[in-house]
Length: 150
Ligand code: 5GP
Ligand code: ZN
Image (cartoon, rainbow, N blue to C red; front, side):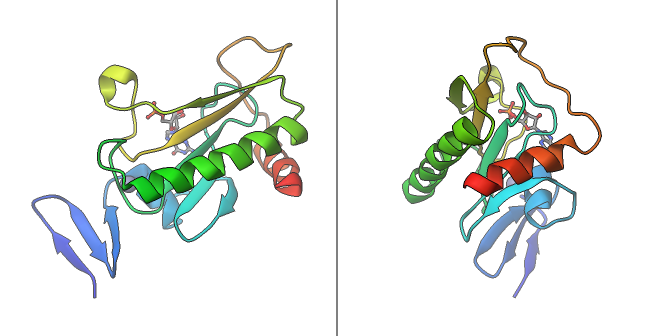
C-alpha cells in the first residue's frame, strides 16, 4: 500500500523509498526519459545528460538514499560491482584510454543531485576537455554499443 509523508516528501511504495521531487527517482519510475544502459532489481545505469565525456554513465540505487552516509553497505557494494562491469564495457565498446570512477557527496564536494550515484567516466587521449555534447541520436547509438559488450 502506498502512502505519503507530507513532512519529508517521502513516499513509500510497498518496500521502496522514493522522493517525489527527485529527478533520479523520476527516472527510475520512467516519469522523465533517460537512455538506460542496464537495469536490475537494486540499481539502474543510464547515460549522463550533460556528460564530461562520450559514454559518461551514472549508476544509482533504485531506492532513494541521499549520499554515501546513508547508503546501506550492500547497496554500495552492488553499485561498485556494477561500476566495474560498466568500466570494462566502456573500455572495450568505446575504446576508452582511461576511466574515472567518482562519487560526489554533499554540495561542497560538487553533488548537485541528492540521490546517491556513482559516475563512470571514460577518458580519451584525443578529448581532454571535461565536457562532451552529443549530436542527434548519438546517445542511443552509444548505449547500443555499450549494451552489446555488457
Ligand atoms: P553530481 O554533481 O550530483 O555528482 O552529478 C549529477 C549528474 O547528474 C550531473 O553529471 C548531471 O549532468 C546529471 N544529470 C542531472 N539531471 C539529469 C537528468 O535529468 N538526466 C540525466 N541523464 N542526467 C542528469
Ligand atoms: Zn531519488
